[in-house]
Length: 108
Image 1 (tube, one colour):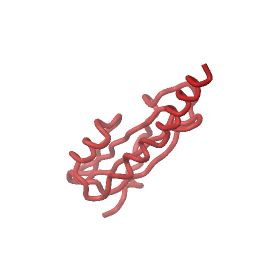
Image 2 (cartoon, one colour; image 1 turned 45 degrees about the vertical axis):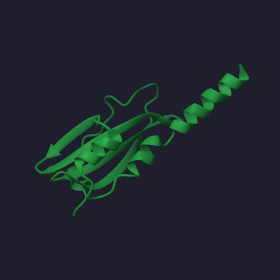
Image 3 (cartoon, one colour; image 1 turned 90 degrees about the vertical axis):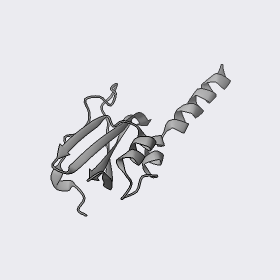
């Protein structure tokens, strides 16, 4: 029984930061196809002219929070990234994506 608990704890900890590790492989200039191949379909997409914000989330990324990453895209290429956390208890990612503040978009 103890062995099973240890294995489950190790599996849970190995998932911590996986969104962070995957987004670390994305770089400015990467194409949207590269982002999709590494991160999959975004949980949220918002548009402002030629600028797009793709948001991803990992539920239970750490102890008591969800990890969110925003990938900024202009003309089909990554121009920047940022992150935020949500500490809403007993929830998932759905419904917790932030509205994009377009004034905080990266400038090329």
